[in-house]
Length: 438
Image 1 (cartoon, rainbow, N blue to C red):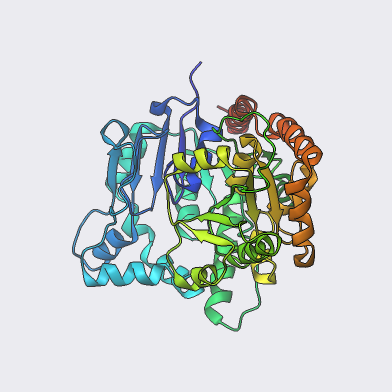
Image 2: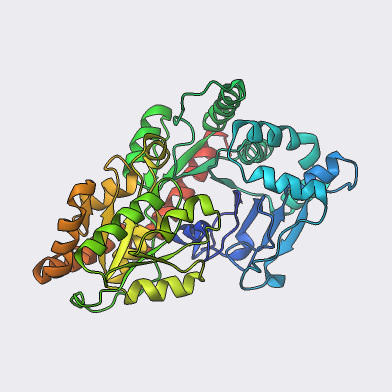
């Protein structure tokens, strides 16, 4: 039996080298003809789960606003797409657009408000878009949550246009994570954003969550009755292997912002106290020196820059210790309180030992501690002792390895999670049709 027609509304289309590879945990078995996506990322998409994709970018909206083009949407068909992203494939080319992207990289409420103005309905809601939607006739909207206005706006429009439900995919706390600010723009942005999300949740719908912590919060507040669907990994588990105490391979791959850079420096310094031959190999797309400067002064870290995800999979499966970190500062903890990184699924699946360091209030730290399959440290003063224990205790290494197998089966089994996804969509669509008398 074929799957229902689902339209994804999200910032980034599926790509195995980005966080959007999480879509594979949900839609791996879907027919491409029954999946489409509207997205705002500036790059040309790659082959993925959707048969057709519709791109609307800030740059094209700006040109439309300046009356330089009439149509903002670009349609991509999966059969015509490349297999991988071109790192230089950005939609830039003139001073105004370049300035827009430079400004857009800064996280500020003023940015969100200006983008909200740019993304007014009359600019993106065109005949071309509606023709593309009518050809597909979606049965459900899959909303990949973000903190922008326009993604929920588009999801809400499609839901109302076709009288269909919204399945919200919630991995971070964009709604409740308020912060203290003297900026009037911030408070206007937050009030407007929450009002929009309230409208989204007033529609028929349900939710898929990245972890139980955020599931319990949003189900309770909004009555969504959603389910946790943990991320999965394509890494093949290796056989158990003791850590090489003379030359342990220790690696971290991922985002180094939100205080993770500081935590990595703490680990690097602790390793150097144990042995001058111990260090962490760090892989990240980060290029901003603000977040990298500490690495240069830490002899226990070796920064390698960006490598393809397929190489990250190989490195993770071959290393002795895979590192997961979060920050300790309140503003960073508030941002990651409910987050559960894709790194957790990869590390658990790999067979490598896992060392976790960060505030226990962070979602992934709390989750990894609850599983009992990793060495967890939340105190800088205990880093040296915890690292020594993991590296030198062979019995502990085998115990954690065996427990990781159990956790992988319990939480991260591909077929179980994909089956749950499919059943959630079927139930939501059928229940909505019954209420609508169809």
